[in-house]
Length: 172
Image (cartoon, rainbow, N blue to C red; front, top):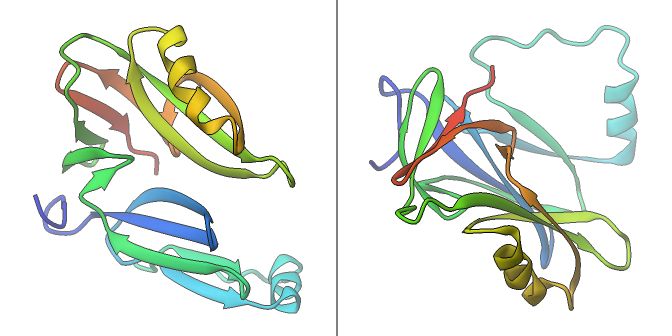
């Protein structure tokens, strides 16, 4: 399904924010294309200490404020972390997966060594933790790596993992 929609409205958006090779990727569901606003440090302070915060309007797109030193892209997504998007409903996001061996979904988190800052997550199917640790060895030369069984993909809790789909709960 191109431009995955519910009732012709909601879509999955891929957002990448960062500098050069240090790009953080995440996904959100929204009717409108998310907005990226570049701001100065003074603009950030003004926004943090705003006495009368503006009320968000129901049809306002998601807004991300980033440093002027960072790059950002927003694009319509047909995949989420490498898994093909089947459909979006009011309660869930359904991803297509080939899990005929009934594997578990693991999350590999990568952190930069020098600054110890978070950089990205990978979601991989594996039969057991030893298998995923072996896969994570490829990243250890460049990153500090943590491995755990996935309970969420980005901010979406995993409702079920079957042999042909991953169902994520929509959060409002």
